[in-house]
Length: 431
Image (tube, rainbow, N blue to C red; front, side, top):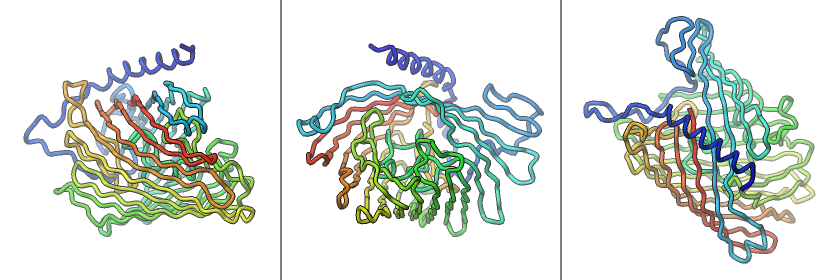
């Protein structure tokens, strides 16, 4: 076993022990008179409690309340393992070897400014990337409540706000990875200004963002000079008593490509794997993108999907059009309901009714997803790939999660159509 693999496993074990000591939260749901947790979350910033606390008192080891500023320290770690089974055609396309990999560790400080006349919150996040052995600045900036605009304005480094699944935290998603089409076409982060709004009486929410790369130029995610993003969502069904919700969304995006060269690529929803679909670099001035999203959540079930189309301005290649999407069904077997954030238009992560570390069973979630991407158009042959993914998530507590997934995918590329089976697992820890 290599030194790097032994180090990764030691790191994962250390984090597991640390999180386990923190995860012993009280068992919820034992009181028959206790009301079930709300299925809607209307907050957009953390730590906004109005409860008074003594000045400069440490409420817990990771939470500080002062007269001018509050601070919460959070973190997380991901460790993944994967194995493959390939047919002869797939082996012609790629050589795949089973492996375990320490993916990343993330640390974040967030809080608010109690003396501010408006609600002002901040966040500063950093990530250690295992494969590159380097640190990166993640979501960092300030959010200000602007009731005159029916919402909040964020300034800094953040997600563009395109696609519900892309907006969600990677730790909160129902699958190990996001769909191949959004990974190929949407940068994970951007620097700029974002306006998030919500009109409760109309059940309409929106996200408008303007971004440029004057701070992020040279970063791996910075593939555009400028971007403009708009997302509009409507909630025609919202019933807390019935615990049902219907979300319908429309996404629009325009981006000016950095240095006039664009490359779209994605892994097969398996982080340790190589890029299965890849257009290579080709000349392009800008891209335009449109997408739809729809999710229906009747109690502990969730049905939904997204589909996206991107056109690249590249006269040399006939202005190619790429597309893809996903459909997903999830079932929380233990009865929990995935909470929805009305301010951001996304789903929160699962909070088990009973924690394993307090003698409970945690939350069990069954998932089935089908995804598709097509990066072939004209003389560009980035490949076509589809995948079926049944999987199980075990949410041991709010701080620990174990995922086990099987995937069957077919790649049409290099004039060969190969099939690959994936067996994946992931340990997710956070505090």
